[in-house]
Image 1 (cartoon, rainbow, N blue to C red):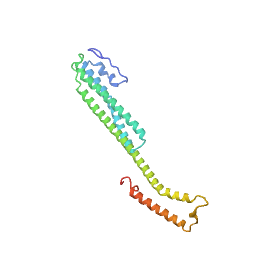
Image 2 (cartoon, rainbow, N blue to C red):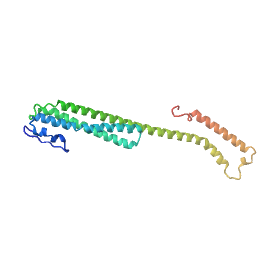
Image 3 (cartoon, rainbow, N blue to C red):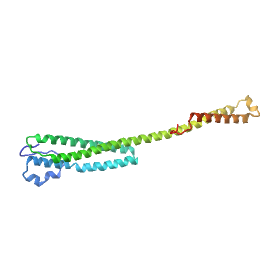
Image 4 (cartoon, one colour):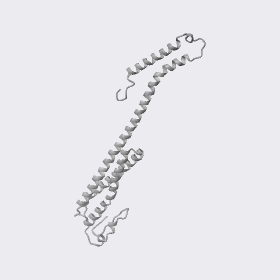
Length: 224
């Protein structure tokens, strides 16, 4: 808030540039004071933007190392929200600078340097936001691919076990049938009953094997 003789600033943190003796004791135009305060305020984003860029490098490393996917996902969304907040702040600052020359108390305000600095930070935050978004999509894609690969391996194991069970189910049925302890079973008195049953089981196994081959169930997933 300002007029021709005084200025009131509201801020949450203490900034060293607000205690500059040259700024407070030297007579200065309102437009120059505004320019200095706004420029120094924008510069306070320089260090957080540097932290944000370092954090995105760490997030990228965690995505490709596949370590703690849940933690990496949380970090990614946190970075995305931070980048979005910076983008919104820079947008508000840019809109305020556009309207500032029209204020009667600051008709000669020249905010070109401020606008260029805001554009630079805004571009950096846009790049971070887009990179985080791409990395999040990549992270989700990798996680989905790993889940699909695990599901494929499980299906392959189940398929092999199913094929083995197809071979042994009829054989187990025959063994169970002739393993019953009934007195009147005429096959038990036959001389060639045992080799006949073995030959029949062998023929049945080859028949099942040929049927499975004809169905293509023994092929790998990328061949079938």
